[in-house]
Image (cartoon, rainbow, N blue to C red; front, side):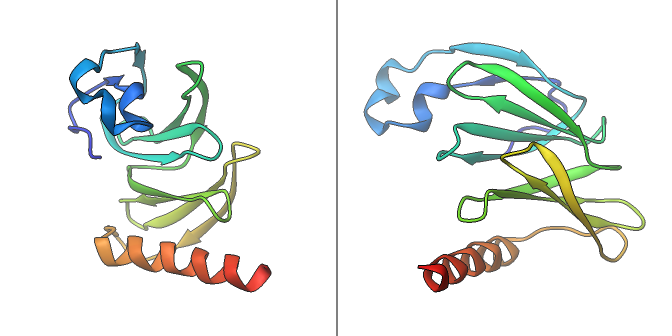
Length: 145
């Protein structure tokens, strides 16, 4: 799910995250004020957390879904855009669209940046990047069992 870049507050339809049967009765449970110019959202259903990139603030907002509250705001560098949650490793990968660019990795359990991977200027994520991250996590999970 992508958020419009001009939105500075995000209304999350939390009831839609867990059940397809509630479409007809969905309601807004909370409206949360996040950073400037939200760009993307990634959800880890195992931990009940949503991660929202705030391009204009250089941060990622972490939302506790069960309590409908902002649990943390994590600085990740200039211009964070797309992000993906890898539920197998409890990591969020954020593409920062800057010069030089980076992929910032957040540990979902500690809510802290665990590493920053330098990449070329102005990186963009793509559906194939998302598939590779998901595929790598599935392969790692299968090997560890």
